[in-house]
Amino acid sequence: MLFADVVATSASVAATRSRLAKVTALVELLRRAEPGEIQPVVAFLAGAPRQGRTGTGWRTLVALDRTPADQPSLTVSDVDSALDALARTSGKGSAQQRADILTKLHDTATVAEQRFLLRLLTGELRQGALEGVMLDAIASAAELPGDTVRRAFMLSGRLPETAEAALTEGAEALAAFRLTLGRPVRPMLASPAKSLAGALGDLPSRIVEYKLDGARIQVHKDGDEVHIYTRTLREITDSVPELVQLVRDLPCASVVLDGETLALNDDGRPRPFQETMSRFGSTADEQVRALLLRPYFFDCLYLDGTDLIDAPLRERNEALTRTVGEHVIPGAVRPTVEETDELLSAALDAGHEGVVVKSLDSPYAAGRRGKAWQKVKPVHTLDLVVLGAEWGHGRRTGFLSNLHLGARDPDGGEPIMVGKTFKGLTDELLRWQTDEFPRHEARRDDWAVYLRPELVVEIALDGAQVSTRYPGGVALRFARVVRYRPDKTPAEADTITAVQALLPGR
Image 1 (cartoon, one colour):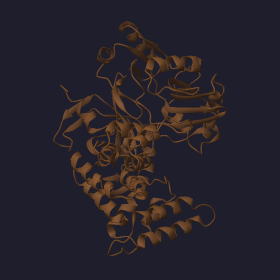
Image 2 (cartoon, helix red, strand yellow):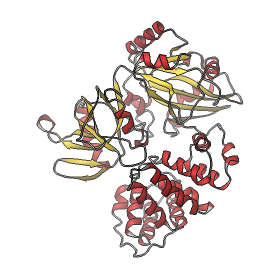
Image 3 (cartoon, one colour):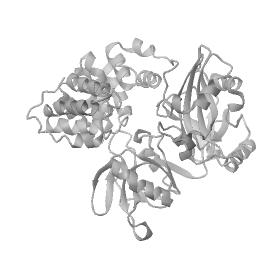
Image 4 (cartoon, helix red, strand yellow):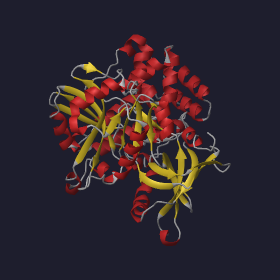
């Protein structure tokens, strides 16, 4: 298959807001792909090479400036092989070797192919943003139920491998995907509740837990071998030795746990979220490494040879409490309304965000955000994509200040602008934005710097209102910055549907 066919399909998908049209275009391409082409085709269209990071930066790619080919000749296999070579290149002389590989690749690429490669290798195709549409397309192309494909993907965590199994071997191959020690699964997510009373009404058989202001972790233990992953499935085992030792000492031979971790002050209150996240960096300094993390576990997906992912939460919670002991998250099983009110007050008094109400009958729906888990926080918050920032005035002169905010298009299009805000920005954040934003710059004018959709920020707001100013028909009310979310990708930002749900009467 020609690489140009993938580029053309990507353009076709980007040009329409119709989910059906997107799926139809993808299905047609997937059915034409040879077995060995399925993985790279799916990876390219989902916006992330299957090789992961290739060690190639934005400046290197922009500096190539090669004369494009007149006619397409690159195949999918040609591009995939070149990316394999890039990913393998390391050590002395690797920069020149990468430049040589990229030069050869770009010399053979047309204008459209060169542009696609630039966006692909810099992450500007929004990694994972097309997952939902792509899963529908894989199911349709393979003539399989959508739930079967989604379940396999959630357990494998790898879209290209899931697609290849579905399209070459069918349902039997997908059924073989199981929770495997050492291979992280996509975390189950909670939906915002309209109110505490609404969540309790939806979930009469429930467990209620603290909603911590921490970082999500997934822990895998197999004997003395321990792996710890973030919510984006990035492994951080080497950065958190105290958590590794704690898990190694748990009274079980093997386990998979879901939870949160955070740094605490001497009085037991949570330290700022950014301080917790700083521990996950590979270049953390000595002071940061000295900041100890405390884990709080709230789910058990596997224990001593038994896969619990499809078991109801009541069974998983029993396995959890007998395994992690004091490290279980604060909460209560089947609390009354009055007890739940007290639990919410206690969580807020302790400096946490609120509570999560969960159905005791629910299985672990990996990767899904449904009504079985509902988070209750006293203030509405949304995770939005930073689209740009305007230069400040007055005391903010010289700083990038007023943020342009976008909600995720659930059908894989560009983020949809829903508002602006400069409220909540501390002097420290202003300095950070001004230093950081140019690293994500797509273009600029006299008034603002416009960014590639790569950064996620948490925004507090009082609600939403109908607006003709923004393309989604909705605008944020009294939006203010809470914090940046380095633990989230734009693919995990809240959707335009979530913003519209805040409109009065919805």
